[in-house]
Length: 318
Image: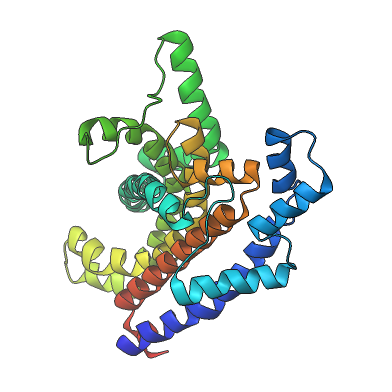
């Protein structure tokens, strides 16, 4: 098991390097120039000399490959993601203040998604073609058809028109008031979680139907084993192997949905930080956020691989 984990960790290094090159280059290809934005706000009559001095001050006067070399060197040897071009704050400190919000939202959404998708998917497979099965399948299709950002917009617009209710615009941290924090988080987390549950629910149902038709399930029933024991000891354990893989594949969707819902519900997470940085062409912040998000996706997929190995011991031997 330790050798399996070590191989998976080593495989992250080249992936991270390639991701850093791509992200570093792409964010600098976004139309617009941070220097022009700064000069337009501070000095409308700035000349070329002023522009060149600002480029030199920000370290943007060098070729892109030299900028990348300096940046990756600071990251590799000092763990430094550089500083914001506008505020001058450390990118790591900026991300550290926003990451807990996005992490909490994503964690709540995933817990809601799994608590809905797996039990309902198992029930739908066991009660195939019954009324409950049709209701569950219809619900999953409905959630697939409605994007989370659209649901979030409707949840904020119509209650404000009909009942005068709108989400809190002042974020309350978890450590200061857990109850108020949960009130702010539960609605966007439920929206995102229910959207994610649709695919997982259908996959769970499909895999459970396939497992329940296997010979060893029929043998267990012929021996008189209780249906509940058949489900817990045999069917669910084998049926969840592809579902666990699907959960890992949904991680980018989870993070992307969290970014949008943070804007809708005014949550000061990574999403708001990223969009503000893109609007300001704050290259170090954009690069740092993308790199941290990419690392989070890789680590979550690593955890999924490890859990897959726990479910199926044959994976650890590959």
